[in-house]
Image (tube, rainbow, N blue to C red):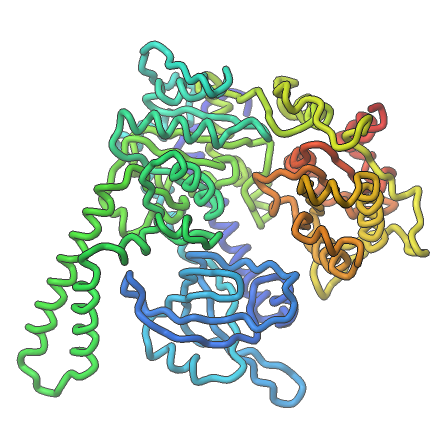
Length: 631
């Protein structure tokens, strides 16, 4: 293809076809999972809660009927995948004879709120709820997310037909035409470094689009918060979106710390008072007119419940009450939206009816390199300029269909703009997280050797004369007669390498002994153990739990997949690569962006455990291995 111009419409139609493919693949996988996958496996994957205890039901402040449910499970190693906005369905288990039959209730509900083992679920109406509350052996599982796809298809269709500003942005993003800018003297920000300052200025100068490209540890969020803060001196309100609820929470929290009035559409993933205080739902409830509105809604429900046959006045009374309720809702909303300077939501969440008819000058998309292009167009429809922040050398968007991936569905809007308009991109070049030697490899391979370490972190280390990176080659070891080979575990899904897991803990134990217990606890040195495979993660969690040695350090050690460590950092990182076979097969470890994320989580010490003979057949891992050996 080279630099030929692709017509935006053709490209978007192609994308719609690929999205259709992804939709079909995911829907089919979901159907299979629902019909064929055993219940235990669903629970293990974190996609179902069973058994469930039903709690109370009530109407929430948004006038939705909701029910509380509690997870009654003894295995707290399982991280579940339930979060705000995800569709779910209830089921019951008939344990006649020995075969468990799962029967689904025929309605979908939506997660409103999750906190630990308690979840609040919005259900369509009380008729459905009564069935569930009366049943035995009830569970709940994630349902296929039809809505997100619907929103993405709709957005693509709108963009293809668009005239005006949206049409202009579409044609601009797909061409090499220069983006327009304002010209005024650059501003100084004494607490930002040179490239961060440049990035904020580029955002302020942009009439159409700007990209903040932030490699690991370069202070992308700090820069973005600054850019939003400065933009708010020129505009009364901006829209801030990200792919995941977690990313939206993170940036909202930072903005609130800067004293910005944020209104968060949707509920946060980490449920604490600080985070909840800026959600729409909490603010709505806290409004002085809410009590009155609540009593009107209650009157409406009572009128419905006690309707008498042949009541002439029923409709009149109903209409009057409804009109008053709507009047109050509009008044409360106008005030909440009027006071807020930042409206924050996920990309799909920006299609909320609460934002109907709203327009904004600027949209900020954080973690833009993790979002499908179609999802980005959902909020772009409401704005006249777009600022994207992220790093396309870190985690890509999730695409389940291999054909769609090959067809290019994984190519993000951010990547497209970076390719077509290098002049709107600022690369943040100063990192504040890692020891120089940990960072250097990533900088050379992914960022054209342009990232430097801030002087205060350059020589970070825990022990004197410590080597910041080591590769423990598992092909050189034996542990308790265990073979260092990967195995495929059907029951829990995915690959696992038990000997490597044992060795990982052994290596950590030795390193801890060198540092000394007192110092680890005094300085709260924290550790991340990363494995690309979920089965290995769960296996490692179980092992750590059983080990007496790690008891005092429980709160300092977290074990997770690469995706689970997105945006985080630790003093010490261990990576268990799992793969060990004679063919040199490394599966999705070929996606080097994942590895970039894994190796750049460490501040002072990185230990990689992997079978060198398997891994180093791939040029990237060969180079990484040689680099570490030469330190």
